[in-house]
Image (cartoon, rainbow, N blue to C red):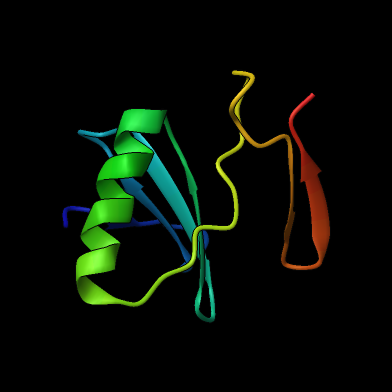
Length: 77
């Protein structure tokens, strides 16, 4: 999918063309990018795996404002 593995951390990947980052921990994938690119990778991953999207954080009223990732609370403030 054209993701490049991070140099200093082997579980972090980056897709330059889509400006999309991901950290992988076991079977958890945490992506960072703009909504259209997050929707793109969500669609792609649904074709390969059975996935559960727990949150899509962002500034818009319809966006989630909080999620627990790897035992930590992440908030959009």
